[in-house]
Image 1: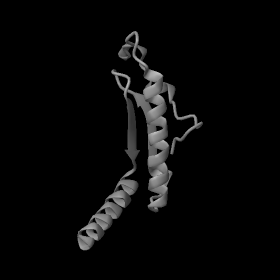
Image 2 (image 1 turned 180 degrees about the vertical axis):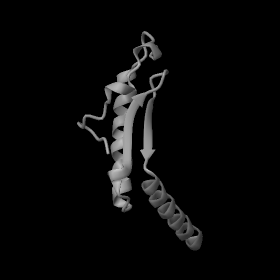
Image 3 (image 1 turned 45 degrees about the horizontal axis):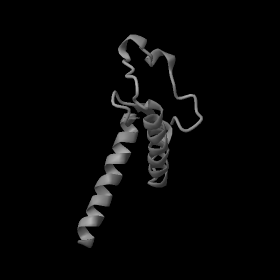
Length: 96
């Protein structure tokens, strides 16, 4: 899982021609917010018992400067998340 300080940027994903930078937009603030959110999501997945070996989180900024977190899961990790989400949802229904 890519986290704060990890080398989560793969040069193959960079397409300079696909990037439009708008003067006055604070992309760095959005990226920072996304980096923090990605770390929180990674921590939550680990706390939920998800094997994070099959999880990749990437922080980016959208065209408007807002933060975006991209989540990529292996099939096994996606199934783990689905099982845990269903179990949690069932618990919430039982409490209500």
